[in-house]
Image (cartoon, rainbow, N blue to C red; front, top):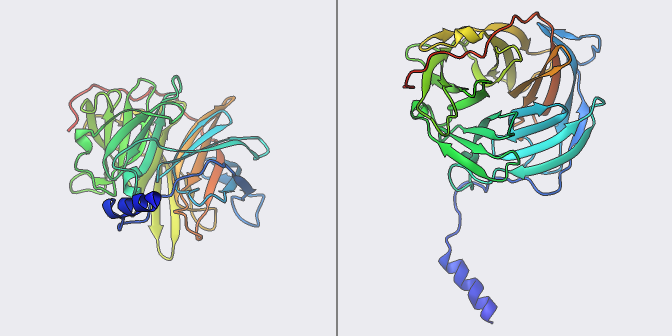
Length: 340
């Protein structure tokens, strides 16, 4: 009887949740399946797309209902870390035979808000320190950047950079890149330079968590209908940016653009060079994650998609070799002025 009374008191005193559905969290049992995909269905001989050479790809699935929604990615050797736009962390090793090994699931231990709704953990971009393994995550709705340890077991700090304060709630930082100098580049998905289609970007002089006000603003030129969905640093110091477009009936196209390091200057508009288009009839989806690695002398480009947990889309992981000559370049450091 006492137990029944206690339960009734809890139900009376604790308000029920009447808002959005509880954010789905990954479970402890990590199961991932990988099915091969083609660059162009029915044409296995197709191996080239612009300045990218096709090396293969897979569609990732899992029985876990929270699996998917990948918006950023880190790759080191054969180890992959995929972060969803709901604060879910998926890790695994990928063999040369495209088989998954050592999968593990986790969820961000802390972040903006209570973590109940998706907007509390709208983690859209990630950067990693190769020396410490620490991760920086940009949250779109709150316009905050959080730093986590290598295992994603605890948060090490966070900040709301003043230069990002007025970025749209659902169009904030969609790209976050860590430079070898210790600086960062953040690019807004929707935030525009006044009177243009150009997207606002911030070049932080150091860690945006500990020094969120040091750096400068520039902008990124984008074609009409396209917006940046992620970016990464190429081994030669240039930026590789994903530009995504959505058109009805449910059709995604993506442009990959290289931005020279010297184009990132205070107040400048950075114009990139399109190196490839992912559009029908070639493989296409809502690509939101990009990473670059080295294999010998080759620059490897990895691209992953956000399936929005929709049956109409897939969680794709694609591998390309950058085949165009890449001139040497520095990390894009410039003089530091207050970010506005």
